[in-house]
Image 1 (cartoon, helix red, strand yellow):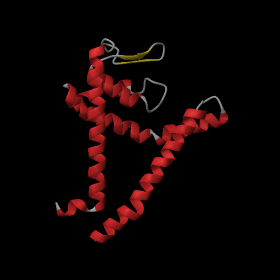
Image 2 (cartoon, rainbow, N blue to C red):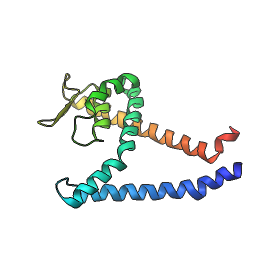
Image 3 (cartoon, helix red, strand yellow):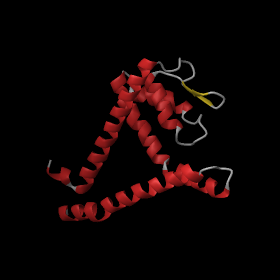
Length: 161
């Protein structure tokens, strides 16, 4: 059984992970170059990018919510406050990490005429920039820890722990 798990991770999961990373980067590049919803080709690449980034955007919001502990926030409270604002931006995905960051830091993020996330509070100050850098760094650490734990569990390494 253990050998099968190791074979699964090295022969199937690892190559799929690399292929998926290349595919997502290609989709992001297409969206950056052609992603205009008014053009036939650009509309398709923009929608494909929306689909490809659906789960990663929400996972990023989850990592930032956990990282809110590093700036004095509560993960559950941050997600509750961020949820209504997450759909404000035109992109179906960008609002989730932005709204979570705004809620975690207690700042308003606004694109005048388009959206205001956490509108009842003040815009960020220079001091908030340091807190934002900490939030993103810790959120990245959370993402790495989750990914490493998932890979270890999948490979069977945790069976002997």
